[in-house]
Image: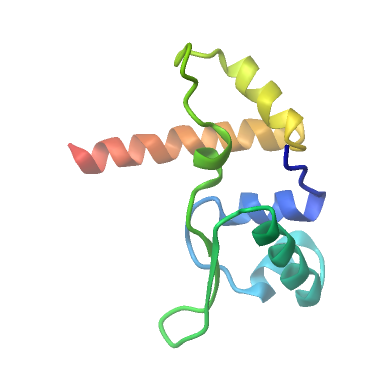
Length: 120
């Protein structure tokens, strides 16, 4: 099971919306230097997290290609209606705090609602 450090969880949370964030803005959000962001992104990639990086005029920085909820909230084969409390326990087991787990679940619900509105 992948265990994420505090900085890695902060980066995943900041990138959860799929938007581009440069190292400077991530550093400001996380309260660290740019070097720490680069190192943490490298470790996240080593753990299999799909983070894209780009340098260019239209965009630069990092973005999460697979939203955090998609990575950690895989559908359960035996019961797709798993209670939210169980999902929080699963996220806690992956190293997220209770508040981060709740935020991820809330972000997931918001993302799914947007997708459903776009599809309609």
